[in-house]
Amino acid sequence: MEGIMESLTRRVAGWPAWRRWGLLLVVVALFWGTLLMSLHTTNLPLRLLLVAIAVATMLFMAYVGRAVTCEGRDPMRREDRRYVREFTPVMAAYFLIMLFVWPLHKEAGPLWLKGLIAFTPAIPVALMIMAMVRYVLGSDEFMQRMHFQALAVAAGVVGFVSMALGFLAASKVLTVDGATPLLLVFPALCLTYGAALFWCKRRYRG
Image (cartoon, rainbow, N blue to C red; front, side, top):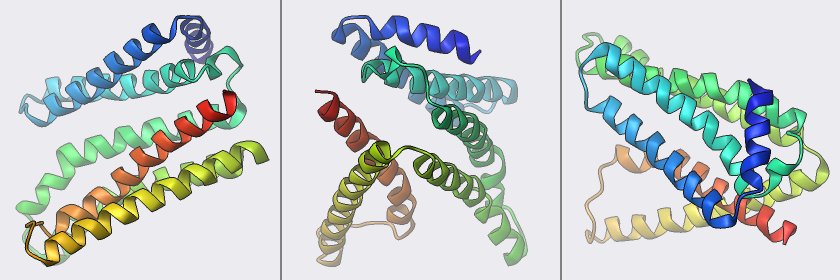
C-alpha cells in the first residue's frame, strides 16, 4: 500500500503547481465534508463508513501534502512512514470516541463515571502528541530545526490570539464559553504548526 501511495505521490509531484494545489484543496474539502456529515447522521453503518472515508482521506492528504511541497519526488523517510503508521489509527480512535463514547457523558449518573467518559478523548490526544515527539526526535538535525522553527511560530501565533481573545472577553466585548477556548488550543496549535512547517519547507527548498 505504501509503495502504491509513494508512486502516486511522485506522479502528482510532477504536476503543475495549480493542479497539485487543486488536488490538495479537494482532498481537504472531502475530509472535512465526510467528518461533518458523520456528526449529523444517526445511521450507524453510514456513520462508520463516513469515519472510514475521513481517515482514508486524511492518510491520502499526507501524501498529497508531500507532493505539493515537492517532497514526493524523494522516497519517504523512515520516520515519516512510522509517523503515518502511528498517527492514522490514533486519529481513527479519536473520531470514534468523539462520535460514540464522549456523548454518553450527558447521561452518565455518578460523577466519577461522567468524568471518566469525558476524559476518554484525551487518551488518543496524548498518543498523538507522543507520535509527534517521536517523529521530531527521530528526524535529522536539519528537519528538527524546521520543526522547532514551526513550533515557535505556532506557539507565538496561538499565544497572541489567546491573549487577545482573553482581553476582549475580560472587557465583555466578546462572550466566550469557558470550555471552548480550552478545546481549541490544541487544534489551533496543530493547524498553525502544520502551516508554519509547510512555509519553512517551501522557504528552504526555494
